[in-house]
Image 1 (cartoon, helix red, strand yellow):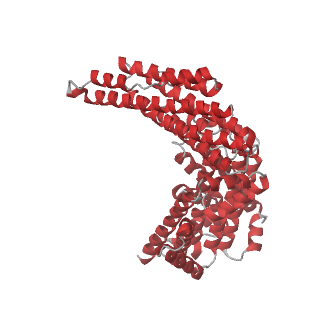
Image 2: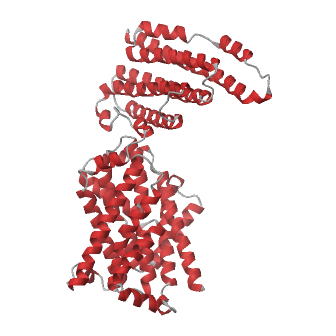
Length: 526
């Protein structure tokens, strides 16, 4: 019973630590962090080294994939370069397996104790996510150490000798042991580390131990298939790439080991013998070989991967919209053209507003919420780009243009939110006469605003000013006309009244936009 209790406690510490690493690292992957990563990956070699480092720190390709998905969606890194980072991150995850193969009991206790006390006494608040990551790493290692102690005498337990004899007689079946472990645990490095700790007492022989490491690649593909079934777009592309490269590497390594056993020639096994005298150490080396193979396969497939992944899992409408088309990182190097690029991105947001109204009419082809999420993300990218630009040295005229664009962006973001709420409220009331009139009126004003933003023509701006004149009295009369007569119609009347309020707010925001355009025209004449 004590062995089972120790194993369960160690397993709990291990998975709690793995979850903590993911949660804490996601807190420090803000935009500034992602921009730094983008700059660090502008060369293939640097991208590969960064991937290895990311794998060592996170011990999870899932965390690396999460960060890369956000960077691809934001246009900070192309898919091809992101796949290089992901491929090399597999190599870094082998660090955990080597820790599981050696005795680091005392350093692990110090790591858990010091990082835990720093968090408990609220020291270095600014670096709390970083110390949280260290504590989580310590818990992972402590869990492995606990499981290692639990299984130290496992080889002498009743029935274990029979398990060992089975794999001695059917050594190739150990491939499926690794595959099953990886499918259930959902982490290759965790599966390898746990397999090594279970085998600490020497249950598996040399060849079955190595074969179990090769099976992890196939297990990754199976787990990825089930876990990515509800993913779409870029996240699914990354998951598919990881799964395919893992299964290819696992099969190759398994075949090489099988050829060695049948031919009696020691190649990989002989190399592992040279590097480590212990079975645990040789298993760790074999896991490193698996990950090196994954990286080689992934990099070899890189010329064809982006096109194939795009066909298998096309980007979603939300991802297409959220990814800036013009505000690439290189745009920061040319401040004079930046305002024109920002204006083009803002026009993309204006076109989304017209799509919202199409959905109310019943002609929409994309879900409102997906479009809204994409527009919000694009708005955040535009705002961050402008914030970065205004911090750079520039001429007075350029500074005026950027500040003006910032004001317009604030108005556009508020307008986008309100038009989305307006469309969401009326989406199920498209047949109402009042709804139709409000939608057509707002659509007319939005089209005029788009023309004014594009042309900057005085006639278009004046027309927008006239169309956005105070309509409060009209809305009050409409609300009075549609009062509640029957309790059964309460939700419909409430929705229509709320829509009139949103209509007023949208008209007011569009008028603010017209005022900014008029002010810009006056400044340009000075």
